[in-house]
Length: 167
Image 1 (tube, rainbow, N blue to C red):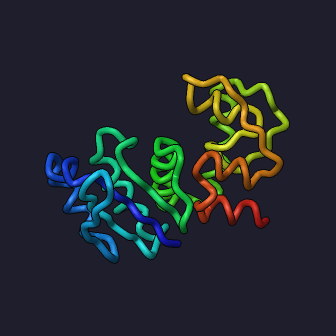
Image 2 (tube, rainbow, N blue to C red):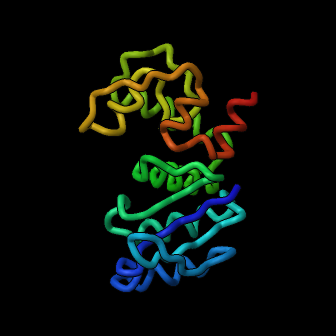
């Protein structure tokens, strides 16, 4: 997959560590648009580069100031995406069934009312996706498929999720 991260020149100048992490990308450069200069890092090997992307985004104090595009699709909720990066990074250091275990723990911890939810990922719950991860919003996600829920949660890219879904 191809992931690009674009950050304003002003932000990069204020946070030198951003430039250090952007240079770890397969390609890196400066582009201009109507809002000014943007530093752009393109990770052609995503999600193999998940740790570098997570470190890069961890240096940004306001994720709303970043443009993230995954295989041509703009990432809408940067906080959800960042959380999924961290989760996948942790899963690489754990067993293959770690995701399902986290899903069960998360359901129990948040007292999920939908005990029928069989999501293999703790970041996705068909009944309480928004309420569980974004307390400022009480809206429910209307989705006709698990894939739509995964896309809304910004986690459809996760190889662990695809392994679980394909079983």
